[in-house]
Image 1 (tube, rainbow, N blue to C red):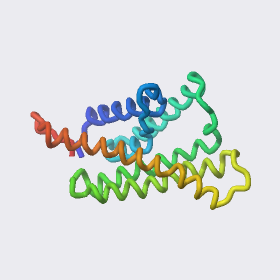
Image 2 (cartoon, rainbow, N blue to C red; image 1 turned 180 degrees about the vertical axis):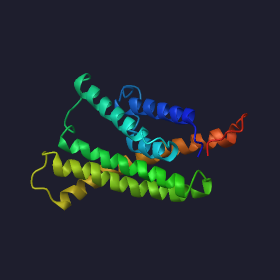
Image 3 (tube, rainbow, N blue to C red; image 1 turned 45 degrees about the vertical axis):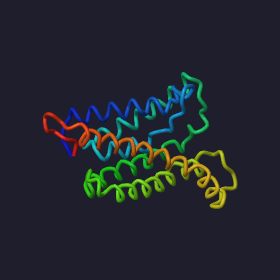
Length: 190
Protein backbone atom coordinates (compact mmCIF):
# COMPACT_ATOMS: atom_id res chain seq x y z
CA UNK A 1 0.00 0.00 0.00
CA UNK A 2 1.18 3.50 -0.75
CA UNK A 3 1.63 5.32 2.54
CA UNK A 4 0.75 8.74 1.26
CA UNK A 5 -1.13 11.36 3.19
CA UNK A 6 -2.21 12.88 -0.12
CA UNK A 7 -3.58 9.55 -1.34
CA UNK A 8 -5.38 9.06 2.00
CA UNK A 9 -6.98 12.48 1.57
CA UNK A 10 -8.03 11.78 -2.01
CA UNK A 11 -9.57 8.42 -1.08
CA UNK A 12 -11.26 9.97 1.97
CA UNK A 13 -12.70 12.78 -0.16
CA UNK A 14 -14.02 10.37 -2.78
CA UNK A 15 -15.60 8.14 -0.13
CA UNK A 16 -17.14 11.18 1.56
CA UNK A 17 -18.63 12.41 -1.73
CA UNK A 18 -20.04 9.01 -2.58
CA UNK A 19 -21.53 8.68 0.91
CA UNK A 20 -23.04 12.15 0.59
CA UNK A 21 -24.59 11.20 -2.75
CA UNK A 22 -25.95 7.82 -1.67
CA UNK A 23 -26.77 8.21 2.01
CA UNK A 24 -28.74 11.42 1.54
CA UNK A 25 -30.49 10.10 -1.57
CA UNK A 26 -30.00 13.62 -2.91
CA UNK A 27 -29.90 12.44 -6.51
CA UNK A 28 -32.65 9.82 -6.10
CA UNK A 29 -35.01 11.93 -8.15
CA UNK A 30 -32.73 11.26 -11.11
CA UNK A 31 -31.28 7.84 -10.34
CA UNK A 32 -31.34 5.67 -7.24
CA UNK A 33 -27.87 4.75 -6.10
CA UNK A 34 -27.59 2.11 -3.38
CA UNK A 35 -26.06 3.15 -0.07
CA UNK A 36 -22.29 2.84 -0.06
CA UNK A 37 -21.74 2.91 3.70
CA UNK A 38 -20.54 -0.66 4.26
CA UNK A 39 -18.38 -0.55 1.14
CA UNK A 40 -16.96 2.83 2.13
CA UNK A 41 -15.77 1.47 5.46
CA UNK A 42 -14.28 -1.62 3.81
CA UNK A 43 -12.50 0.48 1.17
CA UNK A 44 -11.25 2.96 3.77
CA UNK A 45 -9.92 0.08 5.86
CA UNK A 46 -8.21 -1.38 2.80
CA UNK A 47 -6.47 1.79 1.66
CA UNK A 48 -6.25 4.27 4.52
CA UNK A 49 -3.79 3.65 7.35
CA UNK A 50 -4.65 6.67 9.47
CA UNK A 51 -6.77 5.44 12.38
CA UNK A 52 -8.62 8.76 12.53
CA UNK A 53 -10.26 7.91 9.21
CA UNK A 54 -12.69 5.48 10.89
CA UNK A 55 -14.16 7.94 13.40
CA UNK A 56 -14.14 10.68 10.75
CA UNK A 57 -16.10 8.51 8.34
CA UNK A 58 -18.51 7.47 11.09
CA UNK A 59 -19.03 11.10 12.13
CA UNK A 60 -19.75 11.96 8.50
CA UNK A 61 -22.39 9.20 8.32
CA UNK A 62 -23.90 10.41 11.59
CA UNK A 63 -23.91 14.05 10.43
CA UNK A 64 -25.55 13.06 7.15
CA UNK A 65 -28.28 11.23 9.05
CA UNK A 66 -28.84 14.21 11.35
CA UNK A 67 -29.18 16.54 8.35
CA UNK A 68 -31.49 14.17 6.49
CA UNK A 69 -33.73 13.83 9.55
CA UNK A 70 -33.51 17.36 10.96
CA UNK A 71 -33.23 19.50 7.85
CA UNK A 72 -34.60 17.49 4.96
CA UNK A 73 -37.47 16.00 6.96
CA UNK A 74 -36.42 12.37 6.51
CA UNK A 75 -37.79 9.58 8.63
CA UNK A 76 -36.32 9.15 12.09
CA UNK A 77 -37.58 5.54 12.32
CA UNK A 78 -34.06 4.11 12.46
CA UNK A 79 -32.73 6.75 14.82
CA UNK A 80 -33.12 4.81 18.08
CA UNK A 81 -30.68 3.60 20.77
CA UNK A 82 -29.90 0.79 18.30
CA UNK A 83 -28.29 3.36 15.97
CA UNK A 84 -25.03 2.93 17.87
CA UNK A 85 -24.86 -0.70 16.70
CA UNK A 86 -23.60 0.86 13.47
CA UNK A 87 -20.25 1.40 15.23
CA UNK A 88 -19.48 -2.34 15.43
CA UNK A 89 -21.12 -2.95 12.04
CA UNK A 90 -18.92 -0.38 10.32
CA UNK A 91 -15.97 -1.49 12.44
CA UNK A 92 -16.31 -5.02 11.08
CA UNK A 93 -16.19 -3.67 7.53
CA UNK A 94 -13.20 -1.46 8.38
CA UNK A 95 -11.24 -4.31 9.93
CA UNK A 96 -12.17 -6.61 7.04
CA UNK A 97 -10.65 -4.02 4.72
CA UNK A 98 -7.50 -3.83 6.83
CA UNK A 99 -7.30 -7.62 7.01
CA UNK A 100 -7.68 -7.91 3.24
CA UNK A 101 -5.00 -5.28 2.61
CA UNK A 102 -2.52 -6.99 4.95
CA UNK A 103 -3.34 -10.59 4.04
CA UNK A 104 -4.09 -10.36 0.32
CA UNK A 105 -3.08 -6.91 -0.91
CA UNK A 106 -4.26 -5.55 -4.23
CA UNK A 107 -3.21 -8.65 -6.19
CA UNK A 108 -5.92 -9.47 -8.79
CA UNK A 109 -5.33 -13.16 -8.01
CA UNK A 110 -6.62 -12.49 -4.49
CA UNK A 111 -9.96 -11.03 -5.62
CA UNK A 112 -11.85 -14.22 -4.75
CA UNK A 113 -10.47 -14.16 -1.19
CA UNK A 114 -11.25 -10.47 -0.85
CA UNK A 115 -14.77 -11.14 -2.16
CA UNK A 116 -15.26 -13.89 0.42
CA UNK A 117 -13.95 -11.57 3.15
CA UNK A 118 -16.40 -8.85 2.08
CA UNK A 119 -19.28 -11.36 2.14
CA UNK A 120 -18.34 -12.69 5.59
CA UNK A 121 -17.88 -9.17 6.98
CA UNK A 122 -21.21 -8.11 5.47
CA UNK A 123 -22.99 -10.96 7.25
CA UNK A 124 -21.48 -9.90 10.57
CA UNK A 125 -22.20 -6.21 9.87
CA UNK A 126 -25.81 -7.11 9.09
CA UNK A 127 -26.12 -9.05 12.33
CA UNK A 128 -24.77 -6.02 14.22
CA UNK A 129 -26.83 -3.34 12.49
CA UNK A 130 -30.09 -5.10 11.67
CA UNK A 131 -29.88 -7.47 14.63
CA UNK A 132 -29.17 -4.53 16.90
CA UNK A 133 -32.08 -2.61 15.41
CA UNK A 134 -34.39 -5.59 15.80
CA UNK A 135 -33.39 -6.15 19.43
CA UNK A 136 -32.79 -2.60 20.70
CA UNK A 137 -34.97 -0.21 18.69
CA UNK A 138 -38.17 -0.79 20.65
CA UNK A 139 -40.12 -1.18 17.41
CA UNK A 140 -40.57 -4.95 17.68
CA UNK A 141 -42.48 -6.87 20.31
CA UNK A 142 -42.34 -10.63 20.83
CA UNK A 143 -38.95 -10.87 19.18
CA UNK A 144 -37.94 -14.27 17.87
CA UNK A 145 -35.27 -15.75 15.65
CA UNK A 146 -37.77 -16.77 12.97
CA UNK A 147 -39.03 -13.22 12.50
CA UNK A 148 -35.48 -11.85 12.45
CA UNK A 149 -34.45 -14.49 9.89
CA UNK A 150 -37.40 -13.46 7.73
CA UNK A 151 -36.36 -9.80 7.94
CA UNK A 152 -32.74 -10.69 7.19
CA UNK A 153 -33.83 -12.68 4.15
CA UNK A 154 -35.70 -9.63 2.90
CA UNK A 155 -33.08 -6.92 3.60
CA UNK A 156 -29.63 -8.54 3.59
CA UNK A 157 -29.38 -9.45 -0.11
CA UNK A 158 -29.85 -5.80 -1.14
CA UNK A 159 -27.25 -4.62 1.35
CA UNK A 160 -24.79 -7.27 0.20
CA UNK A 161 -25.38 -6.45 -3.47
CA UNK A 162 -24.83 -2.74 -2.81
CA UNK A 163 -21.62 -3.48 -0.90
CA UNK A 164 -20.29 -5.79 -3.59
CA UNK A 165 -21.22 -3.31 -6.32
CA UNK A 166 -19.40 -0.40 -4.68
CA UNK A 167 -16.39 -2.55 -3.81
CA UNK A 168 -16.39 -3.69 -7.44
CA UNK A 169 -16.36 -0.06 -8.56
CA UNK A 170 -13.39 0.53 -6.26
CA UNK A 171 -11.58 -2.55 -7.63
CA UNK A 172 -12.23 -1.46 -11.22
CA UNK A 173 -10.98 2.04 -10.41
CA UNK A 174 -7.88 0.57 -8.78
CA UNK A 175 -7.17 -1.55 -11.86
CA UNK A 176 -7.80 1.37 -14.21
CA UNK A 177 -5.44 3.62 -12.29
CA UNK A 178 -2.69 1.00 -12.15
CA UNK A 179 -3.01 -0.88 -15.42
CA UNK A 180 -4.90 1.10 -18.01
CA UNK A 181 -3.57 4.55 -17.10
CA UNK A 182 0.12 4.05 -16.32
CA UNK A 183 1.49 6.51 -13.83
CA UNK A 184 4.04 8.89 -15.27
CA UNK A 185 5.63 9.32 -11.85
CA UNK A 186 5.79 5.58 -11.27
CA UNK A 187 3.84 5.83 -7.98
CA UNK A 188 1.17 3.21 -8.29
CA UNK A 189 -1.54 2.49 -5.75
CA UNK A 190 -0.51 -0.83 -4.26
